[in-house]
Image 1: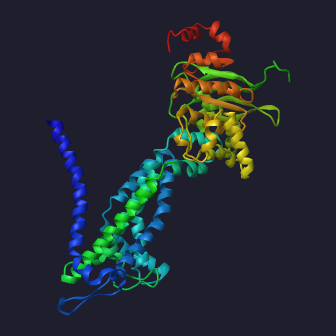
Image 2: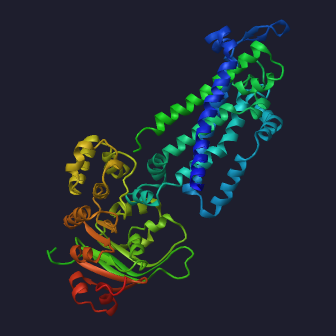
Image 3: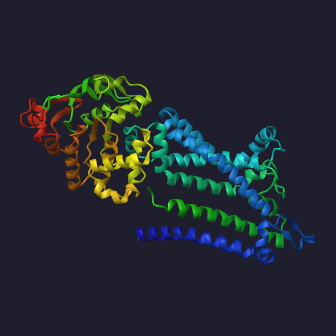
Length: 284
Length: 266
């Protein structure tokens, strides 16, 4: 009896995840209908976001927030990946046992800081630094990208470290035993062995960076303009949604659902692609 | 040099080894000689220090900080024609050079996550051999030397992870043989394998001794008596008895050796 109950509960939990996925997609798709019918695929490369008079109609396009989302995420990933790999390699292969623990705890604590704190810190402390180094007015794509990178680094480093830690000692010893240096062991044994985990950590971080709202809202500038330079302010999908949801009506609301649908699909496709392409490939 | 004259290639002298944090040394005053083109077996109950001693011989202990060596391990150098103490090596590239001269095969097969070809070519590439033709020849020679060429030749580009355990272990031997080591250390190389694969590996080891000097740690007494020319019996970090295998097994000097060999403990 207990066993059956437990089995049913597990089954229920597992199917719940699947139905949530389908349910969310259905809701986004339904509410986005009006905008889908009005703008079609033109939505993707229209740079205008203007409600009509008296909140009736208007022209809405997602080009700028889509670009802002992809660009800030790209900047974040380019910066975060090498640093996170460096941290993970240091903690698993190089650091002395005594300092591994405090370092690991510090990194895990960093990962636990709520994003609004990163946003505030980024705006008041970090944006002026970016301004003095790279010009611009402080907030913009670059600042958002750098702070996003700082946010995902601990996360990425922790997962990568755990995955590198699973490399069997004896495999590393075999490489040393035929005359490999530490660097060669890391490059040729540890990294290929933990490839799945490394890619997994990058994908999860990518998903986090794509959807991050609070910190980016503080730092990206939240203006509906196309960035000419990397330091220019712009906006991103989650930021636009968070800022406009309270007042939007009808077509604008529907367009925001359209944007949400795009974000949902982009995240979904990124993760699915990575999963099937990298993790599904036969492991050497 | 005359055929039946024994030549020492390695000599362990008054060796003490202490693991990090251990109050007492694991190896106590070990003395042992390893002769050229002979197989020397290290036997003894679990925890007697036989693997520890083997792992000192190529300084693989050095990967983990905090250990302590005392005494000498002298290795015959073909260049200077003298015995040189390998415990005096300090620099990373000296240790790398040492490990290219003294290969090691582990308990479980440890193929690298790459193709069969690359597994064997890896050590050669590390030595700086880049020429494709030269590599091809050396890989083939090593795979033949490890009696796995027939099974591997049509699937060189495939992942080594797809081979059976016994094949993987022979591939690991090929990987070490490719570097033309002077000594090969085997750390219980067949304990994870089935009897047929074990037989193939044993045959291979007997074949290899024509070219390479061999030291092997084993739990399996029959294996030691079948394979080896010399046997070392260890107990609690001491070398109790060292001598020709036949003598150790048929007429041991120490009561402890006899008890172990006849299966009274262990």
